[in-house]
Length: 78
Image 1: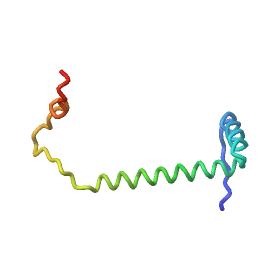
Image 2 (image 1 turned 60 degrees about the vertical axis):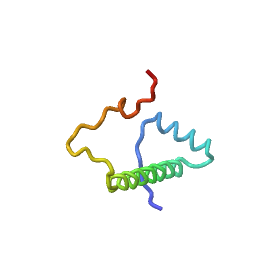
Image 3 (image 1 turned 180 degrees about the horizontal axis):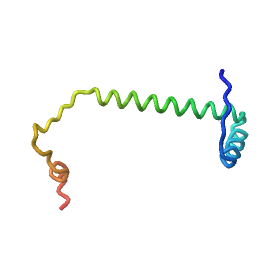
């Protein structure tokens, strides 16, 4: 494990102390867990975005305008 020093506003530090106490852990461990969760979330998002961008598109306009949403989703509500 790597030790680091961080700086934060007093209000943030107070929240961190209270949240760490509520979770029965240290501020150091709380910050580490929050950062690890953020890292996992960002990695999952990037993988999902790359997966979506790499897919072949089944729709093509061939230069023509796409139909309006109302035209394709007419549910007879008029």
